Length: 446
Image (cartoon, rainbow, N blue to C red; front, side):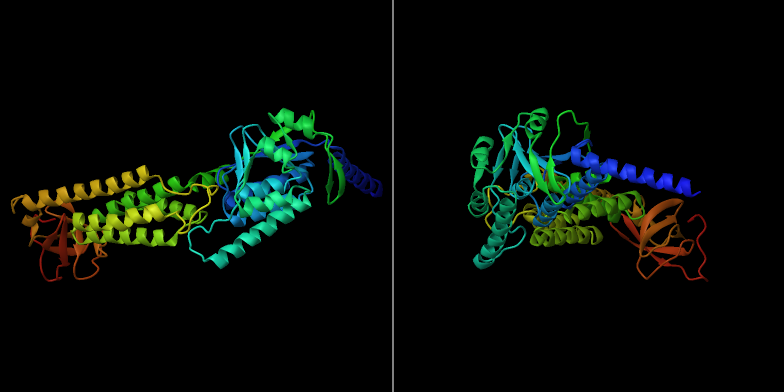
């Protein structure tokens, strides 16, 4: 038993030493991850998960390909801290040609052990922008000074051009790949991944665990993309996608209120609105725009419930469109490097037309009902008795004259199976009251 235990311990120590040697001599795989689009909390989680995986695998290095217009300050700082503290060497590669690392992307790039750029890319323009709120000159100077101090400390730690890095924050300066190499902002220019690995291989880096010499040529490449959940949240965090779900949720909600008991539009509306709010939670939102959208949606609902559909809908479109335009727009002048976070005017126009079209459809249904002869429309049922098919709280379904109708109880809750009496018509819905127990139901009404 003692020999078997000793053999197990020796084997475990051998495996541990093998992993440590592999990490030091560069025998592990090369991990690649791609960061594209706006930097948000999902991006930070993706980078964190991949760096942890690289450490567990004893990777030779991590190559982070970067193409971003910038993003949120909080996730950017999280990623910077991860790169500075990573025991695995990290190479940030601004690629492919035409890519950029501006605003928050500059901070992330400078925090890497090695920074490379593909031809026809650019980097810089990191002046902070207060998104969704208005601040004074004193507060703006504080925010700018804080960002300048952060990027200066990052550049100094990585022995890069700290003076230019600070100017990129204070003056929104940008550089092409060749200019960045000359200014000692980046370490090399690589035409593709193979060229990057060839040039980076052999470089010596100082990490927390000591000096590491990169051995990248011939390494096994392992690319790790976002998982399905991360990809889903990253996609819906795009402003136009978030707004589309918000608009669809509003339309489904109006459809459910116009015809209570349909269930499917109500469920779809709730799902769309939940997804929209999840997306808005990871985006810089202008709360004045959110408030205007809420006012517009309330007016739409009032129009449905009070049978003043078109008039109130037109009035509601004004705050709805204004809120849509302001939803991701800061109230202060923005830097040219700030990511374009606004809803497409075409999408706003389409949402407005869809709401108007829905209102006209409901209005047409109301006009058709109102022009019917009393004996051929819903008016003929006034005074008739029936049975509640569902609970009326106060809306629901009733069965009158062998037909199912949408109805609203005007005297309180009516339970399914209770006898009811039609006392009026509101649009396309019957107004009903409960029938007293002693009052018999007319034959043929059920």
